[in-house]
Amino acid sequence: MSSTDPAHPTVDLGGLEVSPIGFGGMALSHVYGGIDHADAARVLREVIDAGVTFIDTADVYGEPRPGTSGPAGTNEELVGEVIAPVRDRVQLATKFGITGAVGADGTPVRGDRAYVRAAAEASLRRLGVDHIDLYYMHRRDLSVPIEETVGAMAELVAEGKVGRLGLSEVTADELRAAVTEHPIAAVQSEWSLWSRDVEAHVVPTAAELGVGFVPYSPLGRGFLTGTMTRESVQQTVIAGAERFGEHFDANQAVVEQVRAVAEELHATPAQVALAWLLHQGRRFDVATVPIPGSRRVERTVENLGALTLELSEDQVARLDRVADLAVGGRNIVSDPRWISSGRE
Image (cartoon, rainbow, N blue to C red; front, side, top):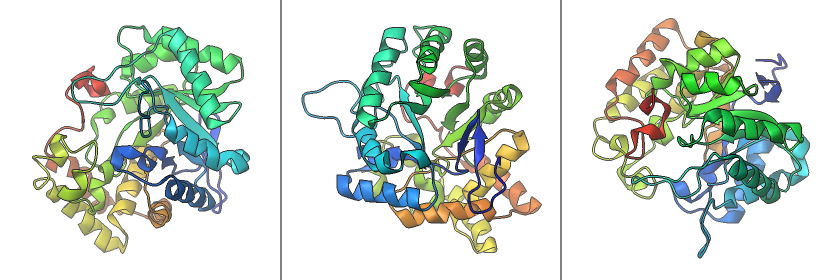
């Protein structure tokens, strides 16, 4: 961590000082079931008041409006509304590139220069800000060289519209190519106790290049908390994914192992899962800032308890074996190229 102040610890992501645990704004959208706008705004305000200053969103998050196409943008509007009075306290991250709804039969993606610029201008407008602190390429457009996409993003930095650049779900080779065009502050990919494929190549490369890592779904899309039910899964976009569908029961073995360690520490499974992930960041010597999301403020406060949770060597070793129990891959769409390991 960059700051040693126990009351306000921070982590350095390529020069951007952020809270050591961020907040994933996707939780406050239709992706995980409907939520009232007023309730979502209240949750986000209270999350910031609790000390979380790193807020992550994307132009594709939110309920699509009838008769419109392209990114919904409603999550960005929500975030912009809430952070307006406290903009100086918030490090804001958003993403571009996914141009339509995520689906099993293919998801449209664009990374050409014209689209990058248009997407950034639209996000700035919806967020109501004059600059975006961390701007991510959400997914690779495989028809466009990554150097072209990052070059267009770099122009936004030069113009003061973006502070730092990030990449989501890139391979190690794609990351190496990207940094030849412009410094990359962070890679965002799924990384958790049961999703560790990024440890093979992407995380070590990020560490080598001095790039931070922002794990999304650090609680296994909620599964690792032990609170998920078959009924709750059916209301979400992950209902058809292997881990949460046909292998739901088999994967309870994963939950039981996490719960066992949590009971030993008088902690919650969520705290244990996050503490292990922060330990992994130190193990790989890469700045690591998980971004769990929740619709309940008390869960966010609970998550922050992971920062002071100490795992024994034996507990770490047992948690290291959890991934071996997981049945089914982490991809939630049918195209293997949607995630980095499908292109390595």
